[in-house]
Image (cartoon, rainbow, N blue to C red; front, side, top):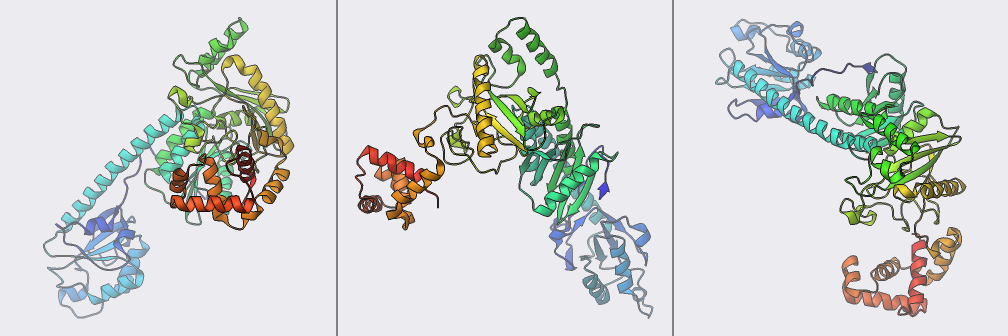
Amino acid sequence: MQETAVPSAPPTPPVSLAALLSRDDLGLRQITGPPAGEVTIHGAHTSEMSDPYPYLLGGELLLTAGVHIPEAAGRPGSFDFDGYVARIVAAGGAALGFGVAPVHDTVPAGLVAACEQHGLPLVEVPPRTTFSGVARAVWQLMARARLSELRRITQAQQGLAAAASRPDPVPSVLRRLAGRLEGRAVLYGPEGAEIAAAGREPGDEVRRALAELARFVTGHPSSTATDTVAGTRLAAYALGPGRGFVLGVAAPHRGSGDHTIASVAAVLLSLLTGEHQSGTGAARSSALVRLLLGARREEVAPLLGGGEGDGAVTRWYVVHARPDTGAPDAVSASALGAALGSPLVDAADDVVRVLVPAPPRAEDGGGVPPERDGGVRPEGDAGVRPEAGAAAPRKPPAGSGPAGSGPAAQPGWTLGVSAPVAPAEWPAADAQAARALARARATRSALVRHAERPGFADLVPPGEAAAHARALLAPIGGVPALAETLRAWLSLHGSWDRTAVALSVHRNTVRQRIARCAALLGADLDDPDVRMELWFALRHLRG
C-alpha cells in the first residue's frame, strides 16, 4: 500500500513505442521484444558505456552505436551481451535502440538473442537517422501527449463542476468521475459504509480492498493512498480533515492525469459533504427567519435551492428514512442527505427526514418522463414498487435514481418517499413519506414510494395474484411466444400492425398467435373485461 501526495500538475504522460516506430522520417524497425503497442517510453538517453545502469532513471529508450563492444573495433574477444541487456532491464530501461554504422553494419546476433531472452524491445536505427533526431521525436511525441492530457483534464474538470451544480450533486459527481476513469467511484461514510457509488461494479476482492483502503486513509495522517489489486488500480481520498468521508476510486488502468481528475472530484465532494455549502447557509438561515415571521412556505422555497426555479412552482420530495442498524446520528444523517442531493436534513428520534428538490416536470419542458428514460413507474412491474403495490426485493441501486424517478434507495437505509409536491403541500407529503416508510419496513423493502394513483391490481396480495395468473394462463404457459405476443398485443390496444413491428414478425403471424391464444384460453378477446383480466394476469406472470 503506497501513500502519495497530490502533485501540483499532472506528470508528462509517456508515449508508445509504436508511435515512435510509425514516424516515417526516422525509419526505425523493431527487431525483437514485446509488441510496440505495449511498450511505453518516458524519455531517450544515449550511452556507449558497457554498463549503463548508473545513468538510467527507468523508462528510457537507450540509444547506442555499440562502440563499447570489443568486436566493433576489430579486436578479437567476446562480449557479455546477456549481462549488458540484463543491466538495462534491471535499471528499468524501456527499449534499446541500436544504431547501424559507422561502427556496425548490422545489429549483432548476440545482442538480438539477449534482448529476446530478457524481453527487451530492440530497435534498429538506420544510418541516415541521428540519435538526436530520435530523441527530438520522443520529446515531440511527449509534448503532444501532455497537451492532449491537459485538454482531457480540463474537460473533466468542467464536467465535474457542472455535475456538482445539479440538483443531485454527489451522485452526479460520482457518475461523471466513474465515466471519465472508466471505473468505479464510491463515497464512503464515517463508519466505512457505501453512501453512494457509480460506475461498473468490481469483483468482491476489489470491492473489499477499496473499502480497506478507505479505512486506511481515515486512520492515517496522509489524505491519499493507492494500491493495486487483481490488476485494478485503487485510490482513496479523504474528504476534509476529521470528517470521515472518503472517496474511493477503482479503475482498470491509470493515466497520468487520472490522479488530478480524481483530486478535483475529491475537492468538490469535500465541499458537498461539508456542513456548509457556499451561499446556501445564509439562504437557509434567511428562509428559516422568514418562516418564523409568518412567510408562506412557497415564498421561502426558492431560497432553499433546487427544484424547477426560474419563478415556477418548485416541487419537492419528502423522504423518511431509518438506518437498518442502530439509531441515526447527525453525521450519518448528513451523509444520507448528501447522497440524496440535499442539505435539508432533520434527524429526530429514529427517523431522518430529508427535503429533496424534484427535477423539472416533462410537461414544463425540463425533464423526461420516467417511461422514456428508464425511470421507475409508479404503477410499473419493474424497479421500486409504489406504496400500494408489492414490495420490491432488497437490491437497491447506489446514488439517485434516473431522471424523473425521484430519490433512489440507499445502502444501509430503509426509505419512504412522498409524491413530488409544491411547498404548500409539504405537510401532506410528510404524511405520505411516513406511511411509505411504515410499509417499507413491514415488507422489508429498501424503498417504497407513495403511489399517487394506486390500482385495483395492487389490492390483491402478490402471492395470490401470481398463483391466479399461472392458473389462468396455464393453457399458453408452455409456449412463450404466445404469452409474449398476447402481452404485446394487449399493451398496444389490439393493434396488429404495431404488435408485428414490436415483435419483428408478420402481422398474419400475430393474428394466428392471438387466435391460438383465444382458442386455448377459451376466451373472447374482444371482451374488454377479458382483456383487463388477462392483462393483470400477464403483469404477475414471471418467466
